[in-house]
Image 1: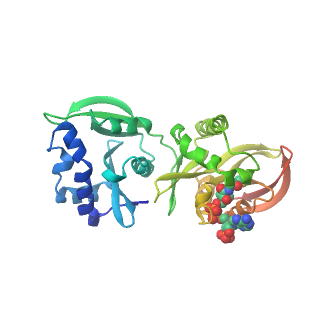
Image 2 (image 1 turned 180 degrees about the horizontal axis):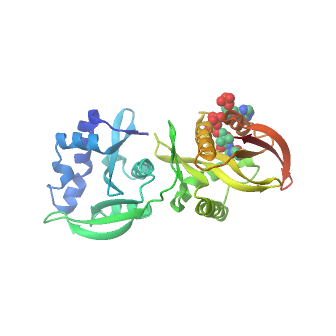
Image 3 (image 1 turned 30 degrees about the vertical axis):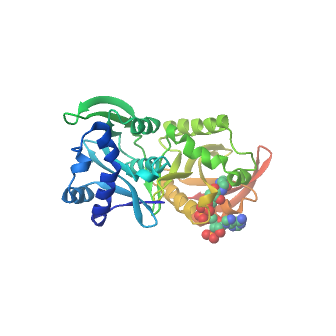
Length: 319
Ligand SMILES: CC(C)(COP(=O)(O)OP(=O)(O)OC[C@H]1O[C@@H](n2cnc3c(N)ncnc32)[C@H](O)[C@@H]1OP(=O)(O)O)[C@@H](O)C(=O)NCCC(=O)NCCS
């Protein structure tokens, strides 16, 4: 499955899918006049022109969609739809992650759903949304508005990736990286248990709060999925403190140049907006894939050091 931006040529299939997906809501509220069911093709084209609309595609067929726009600094997300036969498989969650990533600098996200739509409410609450207020949509249907604070901060965008500030609700997505046996093997450790993952995430969230940046969560645009982390961690070395460039991707995504793409964006951020004049990367000796990424980003081998009894190659770059 891929998640891609939709354009006006997608108006018809998305509208058809919307009507299919909202049929169960119409039954729940005995209300055929719900706005998603009465939307015209012309109105759908206008949405596609004015809003960011994403589509989930499997084998060229559109199986899901979501749209959003910013008004008064708030990112309003709406019309999350997944084909009825494909619901319950995580497509809705991935569409939500993808649309939030597109509006990663929004201070707040807002959406609404029918008061009786228990599955939708569960999904949004699992994604960190909180109920705010209820309002009557029409004589038969009452909706609940939910919102979630954004985490404005630096967001880096590359051709295939969005790197955004890490959030507590990234826990599960990031844990998949450190549960990956291939990733653990690169570090010479066992896959992380829950407590180790909590420590790791907590440390980075603290670092991010102190410095305004840290390791970013890496989202693959076409999957709307967290696939890795990449960013900076300030470290104390003998000759002063320095930002270390780090990157970890789930192994299903290795070998496509994605770590290099992320790390180049972080390098430019570090030497630009983050005001660093040098960068290092500490790489466990023998980790050739990581060494190669460091080289492609422009870092050069400076020395080999021992930390915690383990030899590390220290790669570095001076601006
Ligand atoms: C390091 C890591 C992020 C690289 O991700 P990636 O997306 O595959 O990286 P890229 O595709 O951008 O580049 C990888 C480069 O290493 C090369 N490479 C991969 N495995 C290699 C190996 N065993 N020996 C030598 N080179 C290797 C690739 O060919 C590529 O170089 P090229 O473009 O010159 O062909 C990934 O392997 C990872 O997450 N490893 C586990 C965590 C880790 O080690 N993080 C770094 C800690 S310092």
